[in-house]
Length: 83
Image 1 (tube, helix red, strand yellow):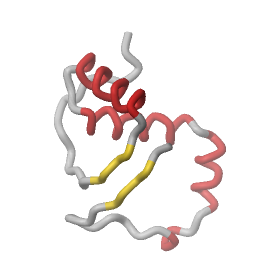
Image 2 (spheres, one colour):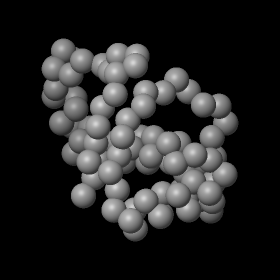
Image 3 (cartoon, rainbow, N blue to C red):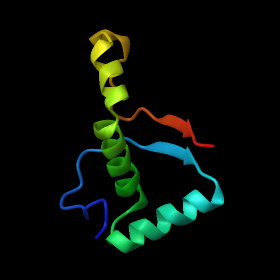
């Protein structure tokens, strides 16, 4: 049974760029194929899953002030580099 569920409806999204090593890219591509979804969906759902399960992150997040991090505006691109 897959850990992530296949998408039902695509929510509003913001484009980002990711840099992955070859093994991570291959796993991402294959997992998306396995779910019959896009790599973007897999990344988004994996981030949601990790953030919701990480109790230390949840505690840290609760201690942050609301205005410390502005939301990403429509059309804004962020870049992430995974090593």
